[in-house]
Amino acid sequence: MGKVLGLALPCSSTMRTQLVHVIMPAVDIVHQNHMKRVEDIVRAASTNRGVNLAVDGRYDSPGFCATNCTVTFVDIETNYVLSVVNMEKNERGIDGASCKMEKEGVRRGLDGLIAKQFKINSICTDNDAKISKMMREDFKSIAHYLDFWHIVKLIKKALRELGKLKKCPNINYWRQHLINHAYHVHKMKDRKKGLQYWNSSLAHVTGRHKDFHKVHFIKEIRRCLHEKLPCSRENEIDRHSEEFGLLKDVILKPTFAAGFLRASTKKNTSPCESFNSLINLYAPKRIASTPHVYREKIKLVVLHSNTISAVDQVGLREEKSSYVTRVRGRDTLAVKRKKTPVDHYWRREVWDEVAGVIRERKDVAFLERNNIPDSNRYVAALAEEMEEEEPEKRRDGEEGEDSDVSVELGGGYEEEVDSDSNPHMYPIQPNDGNDSGPGEEDQEKEAKALEMEEEEEPSESEWAKSEEDEEVKTTGRGSKGRGRGRGGRGTTAKRRRVERNSMEREEEEEAEEEEQPKKRRARRQREYLRESGESEEEPVKRTKK
Image 1 (cartoon, rainbow, N blue to C red):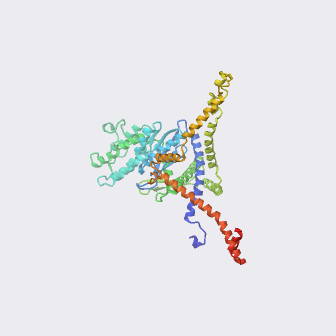
Image 2 (image 1 turned 60 degrees about the horizontal axis):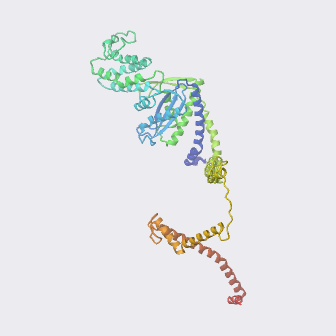
Image 3 (image 1 turned 60 degrees about the vertical axis):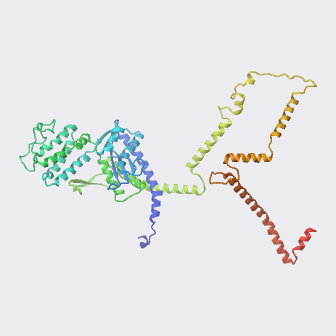
């Protein structure tokens, strides 16, 4: 396209290089500064009990072969993304199983927030058994709630499948009513009583609205909460029919009952779901990315999401319009709201940081080109030099330590030695003429010692023999043995021969260098004689005379 228009556009490799070495470092700087501000805001807004978080994971593939997983931690009070953990399938502890990424991401995220001195009161997640077990065993001090939308979603799916059967003609009529009733009883603080009202929906679809004490699966309640309904037997389900039995299995499902009791009335994972939908703008599931590029895209999503949350808290966004639409692939309606656009100032901050990154790259290139160490390498070199000097100072005798001289004298500095505490003077006695003095005796002893050393001193042949013996001890064989590879027998002799040959070669090269000026001088002399007409023998005879 650039060639057709006559424009000098950069190629793909140049763009990739600029992204990796210029744009991504600038994004890292802006993201790091932004997260510090977010952490300060969340700490200031949190109560004494701690922070309440919504946690959810998002995979980068719609199938079962995901490579990356993003686990998001959103503060429910401020709606800020407090932390994001990006997991890769090939990391240690996951071992290629993509289903383990979300659980490990939740663990790492909680450990990271606790390390930053965040007090976590509770978290709200989807109905994942692996996460529930981990929270029950490893994070007992943190309350774990479930998101009710993920729980009732299974009921929706089961009722939709029943409505497709010919033997269940009335399920499609009651399906949306049952879902609305589930959300209504979910608002009750008394979870056990709310669960009984959910079970009472089985009696309601059969036309029974009171005297629930006669129904064995309904306890603690007597009648329905609604007012008297008109008498109409249309779409009622016979409690002795097969349709009622299938509906009863769905309504009284044990997993739904357990999830209903653990679901929170005020906490949900909707902020995380909004964040996951925003990821599709930067990292769609249909487009694969490397882990490094995927992490950088998620940082852009964090900046985008937190900017919108900040403007919503201040109240600067106004709703322009709203409309109801049917969700594609589902039998539900959704309300879409359009608000005023947001000024994403972080994009300008990234471009401002790009100039600084370019200057830093030029400085690093200049230092490398001129062999000048940068600050980090200079500090490391100084540390190594100081470590090397410390043992030498200790050997020389630092302050507070005893030197070699003080140890020999029997103490440290300013300490008394034996000669100071018990001085003794030996008198000098005169010698007779016949007796030899102490000086003569010492001279005789030294002479005898020298004679003994001369007798014990080996000859040159003995020295050579001793060297061969040492070689045999070290190598296992004499210098005449054959070398058998690296570290085998005869390697020292072979090494010595190689060294001797190299030394001889060096001597020959030096001799040739010394002879070259003589040869040049002789060649010039012959040329001069040819030009003058004299023979080469005459100057030789002159030199002999």
